[in-house]
Image (cartoon, rainbow, N blue to C red):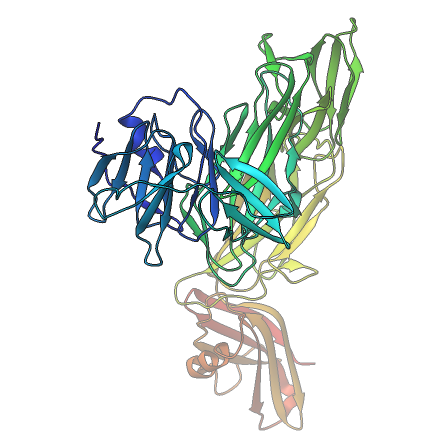
Length: 598
């Protein structure tokens, strides 16, 4: 019977993966298949096993006694027919002697001859048919050793070389398998790499649980490496987090995958991991283990398994979280981790887990039962933060003053706590900032507020109000709780903080010190008085000082000033008693009162 098979797809170095195509058309094999053939690189390959397992990635259908593929021409031998695929993808089926066949190729890679070991006959391949059958028997050549690697096909070791020999043909040198161009590593903690030998033992796992190992295929060479096979024979070992061949690994690059060992029953297990032609025997052991149960806050019980990561929930700082644990049958149990302790319960199978911490944040412990590790997580929350309130010592607050305040809390703190206090200043429209609006003594606008353990109020804090009209906003923050308080510095007539009148060398001198919250001083008037109580000539003396004050205020950050006025005096100075000053800004006029000459 002639089988019309789909055209195989070349993979990797020229071998063909018929396993993706043929099983859909042909039933499974029922008898062992064993044969030898050459691949496209001239290396010897062996086919064996009931299911047609190959040492190279090629699979053939039911009834195939032998097969070969050199990357160009594919053929297989059935019970009494030979099937050859032509270069254009057609299949030719011709009668052939019973039993296996061994095909050879010429230098161009075309089929040249078939040898049939069972009948010791050979025939040339004539493009689309077999030539006349000829007898071709022979004895093995002298050699150091002769090992069968197939029916009527032998491997010969001679003079440190390996040759393939079949009766009726000359021995042919077999290219030895190349050392894999890649290296297989076990990935450890911190992404460390440890070389993997011919066998690897997985971490133990109890029945129904699993253990895992992470691997890395690294290419240390200068050329890309093709990975065309990554698989594990059937069993409790499975790959995951893997790439899917075919995949190239660039020079110096790597590909990662993981293996999970999941035994359903107790016992020892073994399977084979394949990476291209590399084989690694995977071993795993599973022993019956205790059942681990954790009591939930709802009262229900949760079964724990090796590798689990369990969230036990939150606990307030310095408080204690506790959970009951059952281990059946009783076995060795340990618990490690900062803040975690384990105490026995009423029965040998009962335990109590405790977690207490003075450090807010995540806390992690490791519960170990029968060498099975389980991670326990607890979130330690800080004490509730009391609500703060700003308390001013004087109200209202006027300009050019040192104001005092405290921060009061809604309840005493259970541990020393540090909040913050800040102020902002928004001057009235058109006015610049006032650098004098700060906390003292640091002259900054943000300071820490420290509350001692058990206290509910801060120490006294001091700030300057400045000399500029605007809005001062105080804000205190404790955790997520805040409080604000605003203070309005109102526009006022010029404030005189000091005034002095004196004489020297026949001249009168008046010195005024003060501040202007509006920074708009515009006029000043002087009236001198005699000892008789009458105004001295020429009476009221006014001066427009808008320009000099405007220029002056541009050079400072506040609004404080000192004004010095000098007046020549004719006549007898001793007749003068004093002077009254009147100064005006946008908010009004301020009188100094009678200043007597010193």
